[in-house]
Image (cartoon, rainbow, N blue to C red; front, side, top):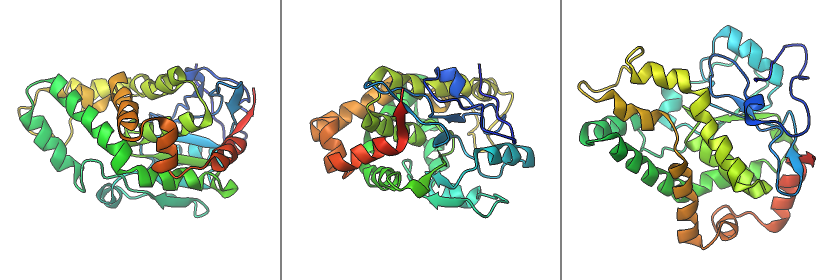
Length: 280
C-alpha cells in the first residue's frame, strides 16, 4: 500500500505509526521517495507528518513530478550530492520559495563516475563490489560527519520544515543521514534497518532495468559483468552494520559519536525530538 498524494491536501499523510510501505510516495521519478512520518520510537512516539521526506535525486524533474511534489509544500531541499553531480544535473525548480541547500558528500571523490568505472573494471566478483561499498560506508560516517552534523543541527530550526533531503540514488548518503537521525530520535535498530533496506523494494524496477541491460548507463565500461551493478544499485544490511560497527570502533559508542563527531548535546537531542516527534 502506498500513500496517495494530491494537490488539494496532505490528508494522505495521517498521524500515528505507519508501516514502511505506507510511507512510500509513488511518483515514478523520483522512485525512492518516502515520508519519515509514522516511524515509531522506542518510547512510543512517532515522527510527525509533514516534516521530513527522503528521496533519490529531485533535480530536473518533469513538470508533472514537480507539480505532485508541490503538494508537500516544501520549504527546504537538502542536496548531499557532490559539487560535480550538482553541476552536471542542477535543480530546476520553478518555485522560488524553496531553499535549496547544498551539503556535498563526495564519498567517491569529486568525480564519482571515474571511481565507479575504476572499481567495476578492477573487481572479479559482485562480492568485491559489496566489500568496496562496505568500506565506503565506514569511511563516509567518519570522514563526512561534519556534513551530517551541519544538517542535523539545521533540523533544530523550525524553518527547516517541511524538508526533502536527497543524494543521487537516495540510498547511501541519504540512507546514512536517515539512520543517524533515527538513532538520535530513539528509533529501534530493527526499524532503522527496515527503512534502510526499503530502498531495494522501491528501486526494484530501476535496478532490474539496469542489471538486465534494458536501460544502460552511458558511462558503463564495455565488458563489465552486469551482475557487478546489483550491489552498486542496491543496499545490503551489511552496509549499515559496517557503518555502526565503525562508529563503535572509532568512538566507543553511538552516544560518544553523537557528542564527539556530530557535536550534538543532550539538550539539542531533546530539542530535535521535540521538533519531530508526536505522541504515538
